[in-house]
Length: 257
Image (cartoon, rainbow, N blue to C red):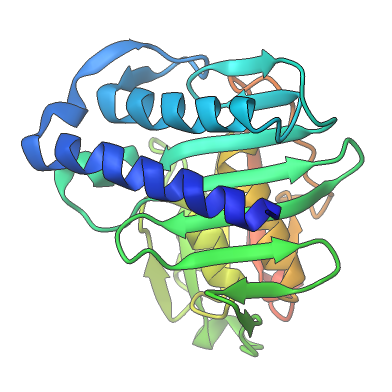
């Protein structure tokens, strides 16, 4: 069984586990403080426990970095899995149909496998290093939009400093904000968005690792707001800025930021 098959099984188990928590409203219960420094809700804990147990039992890696549990090490295949069991928790517990599970595998040199599944539509976004980006097995690529005036961007700005995104917000055609970063970065990789911007410095490797691979394999470009390669720390309390685009508008986006 390949990595994608294992991820499909994890996603199936997580989907079934969190459905009653969503339907009953119990998923919003805060159960502990997560490794990322934010409150862990019952829906997050349930999803994470299932995913980690599966990964450990099947020896898919020797280290897991997850949003709630932090770093977990055990005997298994060499390599690291970056896990966000429910990306878009607020959407999940408030009934907004846009949240996902994100799983990425790194061999120690680079992320080589990226998996994101929409836990509502069950669309699966999968990429493997050097082999392209696929949705439900169909190869996809970024949009061909070449001007900001015609572009659609998802933009996350600093809450108390909205002026940081005003200049670019006035230039683009449409702004979107869905609330699940892994899916939104994948949307850039398949052409549904022309770009994704997060300048809050709160985006973690667990949020972005799978989506970044998908975006780049789809022909997109990903950097920080200074145009440099984004280097995520393993410590999930530390975040980074990120700009992911179709590549055609990347330099212009950075200029306006």
